[in-house]
Length: 199
Image (tube, rainbow, N blue to C red; front, side, top):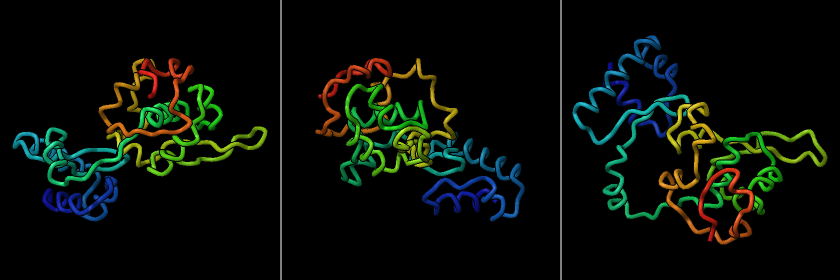
């Protein structure tokens, strides 16, 4: 039955919840988790090129980070990453959500419309409601795609804010120039990180 689980995960483009795997296979959730643990050990011991991850409330197969350079050469497709401005904005939202654009800008010290648009376009953040304040400003929060992108099971796996520096996150996403209104030095960024001023 472990090969059945392997096949199900192989054909799924999104993480598959444990309950779904149990329903499809007719096994209990405990039995499925045991088999998944066995697959994880097997892949590690055999040095396979892929791994089993638990992210965003489900399980998925993914290639090991060690092989990323070779995969990039094969695909030969430039990856669109995040600018420092967008990454700063994303970090602020992740640690303060739900948060409004004005609140983001108060922390960063610069306008953030372009960064918010970028993050919305990439599906990393979403509108989660309206704040009960003058003008009913939009509130933003992270998405399940955010969890998948950063390999997190849930928001509780985010490191403590005082341990985070934006430059520590930069290796996770390829830096992408973003010439916009966010691109000058942020006086408020120091409250979030010690990153270099944006070019």
